[in-house]
Length: 349
Image 1 (spheres, helix red, strand yellow):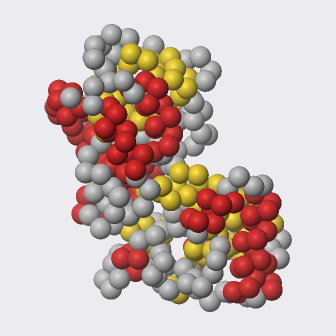
Image 2 (cartoon, one colour):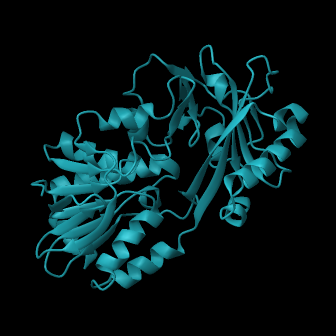
């Protein structure tokens, strides 16, 4: 059992931002993460020692608060202006990121540098898969797959929207006002994506871009020249992200099937060489991101009749899209929990 006032489920950007805000205000929290590392969609793999970003590809801030957080990462390793060679922007997830005067940058060591910075000095428990929530009078009990349990007055669900709903609805479905909140959450459009990491020999010709959002493809939404971010890469690496419709239609199939078709289309637009990488890896972003414009103004707050409160945060609840919105959602929740937690109970009633 824990003596923390707050248990946070999910060590993505939203959960870490919430925990960090609490820590800065003198409040202890415990973060439970099912994976072996932190970051969520700020995801970086290492393949033959080479960093590869297979989620978000670069940093971009529209709010001063998020820009200040990004600026806390070391200057060393920062690639200002990346991407610069961009082909088409109209179908980008956030086309405004490519507008005149917008600040963009990448990291040599990968996108996971940001969540790792947020997680520093926090109590993050990796490989703790949460299976169930239950009310215990004035607290919420959190059960994990391996039998560990945690209790707190406040629990924050900070995973993907689908993951949070799977935990929240069995726990809070009958709470006062919960049906209306869950109906709004189910109405949000979640954008899935299938990702293919394709590795080629280093002497493969430069494709001539860093990011391309092709207009006339059926399967491919974005082609990222990931190895352009690395010093002395071992491989030339392209990361492919699918269109949402393709992901929805093919997600139930084997990765071998849909990755083969995505590579075929890559060869169609770049040349035959692109369809024949030396190796591939895949990733399924089932929940992906919330469609830009669907964000809600505040976290979902669900109060157990006898006490104990569940908050749901993430990019669905931020003032900006993407992981910037996730960060802002986490900061706002952490600030409110530290300052005036009684207001959360009023919001949920």
